[in-house]
Image (cartoon, helix red, strand yellow):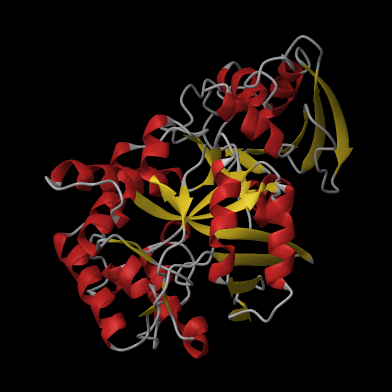
Length: 413
């Protein structure tokens, strides 16, 4: 069962939400955050990227930076820029992109569900990134930013979402990136119904934000162990998440660009590809992969269709079926000798939200020699991998739109 609960959210007043809300901490660098927050003391970047309040070049891991996060979080509350609700609520958070809206339920997820594996992951995490967010959660005693979950479609929750969202939203705005954000406070009369619906689910799935999920759960677990009077109902036993029905979500392609061809000429590289792929020159017009096991290669000003030949993949294996596995093994590893995608400096990754034009730009500029576009992973593939205890290769999924930070915060005390 998935244990969740409502909570007393810490939120901006309606008239301040567009000033407070920000992009997540990990989708932009310090200087981009500094520019976006310029002239806006209410921006959440002052809490989630507080290095912007120091001289340019200040290390975001400097102890002073974490202290500044705490100072700013307290100031936001003192100034009334963030205010805590009086009662425990669930919330509904919807996002609109390209005319499509996805609806999520904002929950306090149970730390022990992460520790036991009932909250399932599909990616590995890096300890240094975990520790950074753990420090941030520890010093603020709060989950400032939510993590992004998926759950199997549930008719009762769909019905509840429709009922609640028929009313006027608390927040309703379009962010500078053009994506719409809509937020409702769920009446307390629905709390038990939501709790029970999640309790009937065997698992929740991390869609995006593995490091934040790990950090939030590990700090909660740490606080429980350090409390001699721990009872199990303390707020630190839970962390902030937005959970979406799986059918609402769309995974975008996550593509690759490479710096060199490992000593091969373009002609030799294409010839080698023919051993495992049907290679077709598509000309100079952009070509997007048409289906699973079909790839788009941009090389020398031309786009190529690469279709993996039967026997080069295993559709009965949750990892072997992935196009990222096929391309990582048969192209990046075997032909280009890129053995570790996490550490190699010869490969970079481009989220599909940037479009095929970004792949072309990076190759045409001479920065990279070739680009490889992949067909997107499906939610079913992601959940199958998590259910079987497998881990996806690095840089496999890209979710868009990203959750806006600052719409609601969960305190641990």
